[in-house]
Length: 134
Image 1 (cartoon, rainbow, N blue to C red):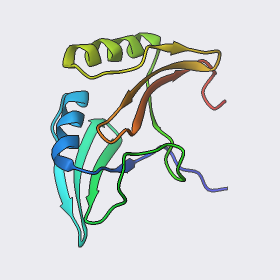
Image 2 (spheres, helix red, strand yellow):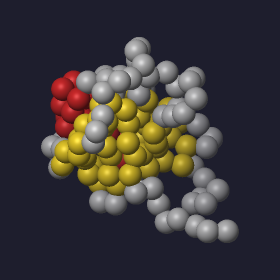
Image 3 (spheres, helix red, strand yellow):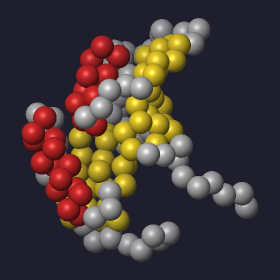
Image 4 (tube, rainbow, N blue to C red):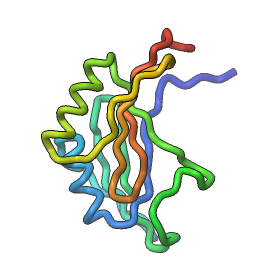
């Protein structure tokens, strides 16, 4: 079976780049690195960590209402952290920049901290309690 090495990029549809771009700049502490335009969309590009590109896409036409994880498609995006201390550091960073977040949740399968962006898209900082590949 063919394999791939990692996720190269994700592209999230947002309702308003003027609202979402500042949120993600604050979240990651860095500015957008590029803008792509197509026939019916504009996408702002971020590189929050080496090896990962995140695009925020505003389409010319889009359904109304906020993101809903129960619709077909994306449920949430999970960003891997190296250990629980990294999750604690994310919680401290989010507090410092004024971004609301969940409590840190410890389960038998891992530890998570959740944030919702301006369109209600769920972002999760996560470390697995299981060995890699399980």
